[in-house]
Length: 68
Image (cartoon, rainbow, N blue to C red):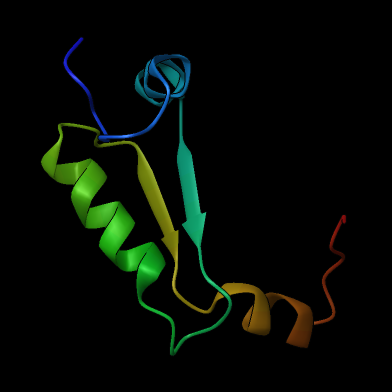
């Protein structure tokens, strides 16, 4: 498989291709890294992507648990 993401180990690229769903999120709604990643992955042919635009800020603000 050609490199899905340059600089990412082949094992990770393989895992991304096999994942049932890719859930991407950022630190909060003003961070656009997760959106950029989702668009890049979509462009590489991965269609099983869920983008949580509110990010960690929204998640924790809603009182949801976080594992660290």
